[in-house]
Length: 150
Image 1: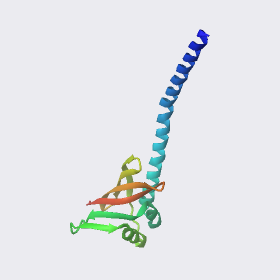
Image 2 (image 1 turned 90 degrees about the horizontal axis):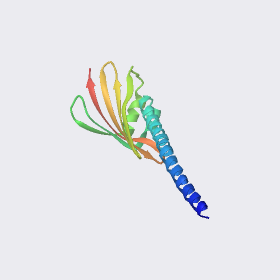
Image 3 (image 1 turned 30 degrees about the horizontal axis):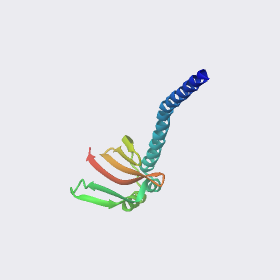
Image 4 (image 1 turned 90 degrees about the vertical axis):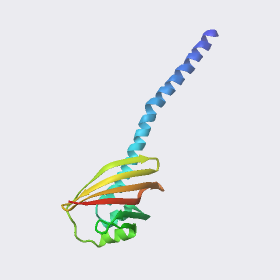
């Protein structure tokens, strides 16, 4: 009887050790998978914005989003409803050559922040986007930017 007790204790300890080992090896994989999923969601939202297509851009923004910036000509602070910005994009039929890239991206839970650089022959723009995961979907809720003429 004494031998069985020892074997059961050993089995309990071995099972616990195995369980702990599994947690330490699978938990990082699960977290990595979740991180990759969230990164892909944020990137998909940003790619809609970066497309330059008004309809895709509209999908990227929450309807109540705003755009704030300092006007490069007057130096005045501007606060624009995103609907006005999207309407301007949709009405613009002139497409310019541009290089656009995601410079950085930070995600913490249901909030994210990204920097996007847009370069044309005339200007360099740095867009700073704040995103929230709303009803399971990433949306840009605010945009600020700086403009630098070349």
